[in-house]
Image (cartoon, rainbow, N blue to C red; front, side, top):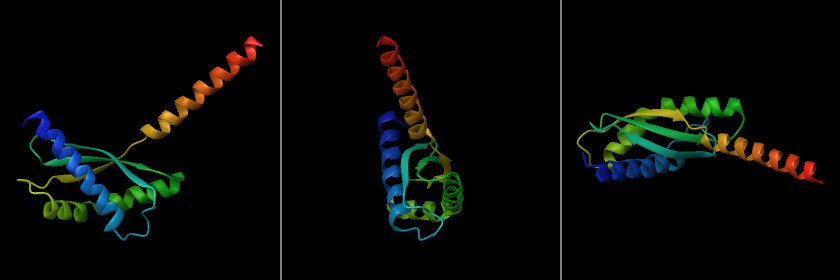
Length: 121
């Protein structure tokens, strides 16, 4: 499969999964702050890793991720109706911590700048 086609499928899957999570899933365990950051579909279109970023405390993140994993069959069925692919990929939900890691690195850099500024005075 050509790389541009793979990227188009990944992006279309990301949009549709995000729409399904926001509009169609009615599970009360899913918090309002769920963001689909990335989707990686395998070359044979059998599996799709869906990376989600969750906002909240650890308990709410865990319950939301469990609810999303539980609703992966529903998401797969909806994807099959919305996107015309030879195979509808099996959905694998993964937690994406890159936003929190970026915030942590930014905080560390800010502390270093403050320390350097304080040492220069």
